[in-house]
Image 1 (cartoon, rainbow, N blue to C red):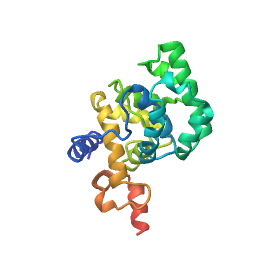
Image 2: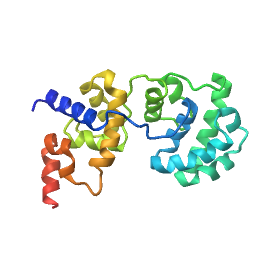
Image 3: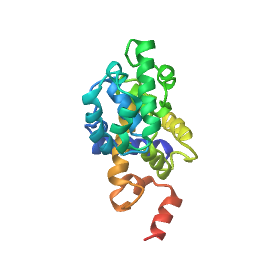
Image 4: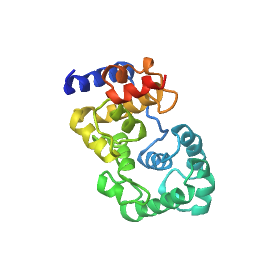
Length: 217
């Protein structure tokens, strides 16, 4: 297969597996999505979806959030890990949204990435899922799969994002990044991986990855 045929195979297979794409993090607007994505750093989406209802019952907008103390926020989000940093970030960005954006979430990468505790990946998820702007947020699943599929050298997430944007059509980015995440969780996990069920890696996988898999059997 040529590189282009491999890319098309990935697109077609993911479309077949995930014609309807669920959004992993529960939210109702750009602000609640921003908070949920921030909480998901080094934490599972399942855990985040258990914690956000508790937090949003008290504050689902920046005006209510700043009425709480950093300590109160920290207590609620503790199960998500990194709670000292995340609670400061949530309080700090809520304050900035009120002061600078009338409580609204900015619809630009620059505006989002200036907020405390918001990195490029978080900004990309919000731009993509809240505002429909083409973006390709790269998480650990996408990073791992793009390497397994020999579509990137996988040196770092920045390189993987560049390669993904170069290889896949822009109009598919928002769907593809979610489809790849779901596929990675279900068929190509880091642990307990069964290559027989992972049709994409089995078909186009990097030779060294496949060799290592078979050696370990």
